[in-house]
Amino acid sequence: MKNFMTMMAAVTFTFVANAAVASSTSNDGSYITVGIAPLCTAEGQITLSFTNVSGQHLLVDPHYMDKSKFDPIYAGLSLYTDPEGQAINLKYKAKPNYEQYDWYVLKVGETVEHIVDFRGYATTTIDETLHYAPLFSGNNINLITTNKGKEIRLFMHTDDESDFDIFGPECWK
Image (cartoon, rainbow, N blue to C red; front, side, top):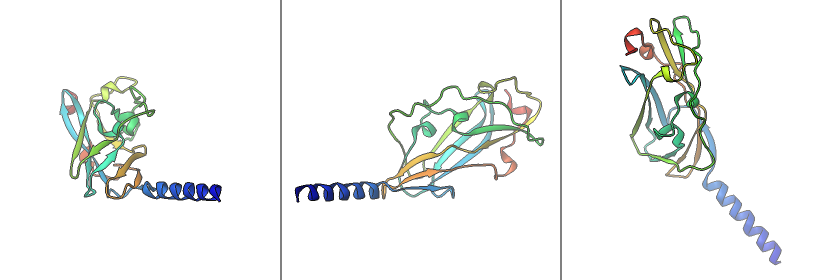
């Protein structure tokens, strides 16, 4: 009887633990939106921003939010010539360490913005006389909702956005 009770307690605990952090995927932009905008300064060509539109605080993978951990190329940013669409070879500087980290608290309505200078990630010299289209097709952005403790894997992308992201020679300062 004691073994049966122990087994039932373990099953109940496992069920409750799994229900507390149920996992699902989302790509509809109901939690976080991603934006790219030309910057055209000496610091970089674009900004890549993430905004919490969920109506609740979110616990987010810090490799996307924390400036000290963020690598735009590893996160899923790429660069193409416009209008040809030829990909520019980019490489990340440092692979994220996922062994241990604290979640980043992204507050309701908060935007985290990263400045990106593609010259620091290109494997060859970038032709600064051309126009370029940056695209974000992020790896799984892991987050946990604070209202229900639900674990979400976001698949974010900007490849269907407008041409406002395209920048030209004037952005290489």
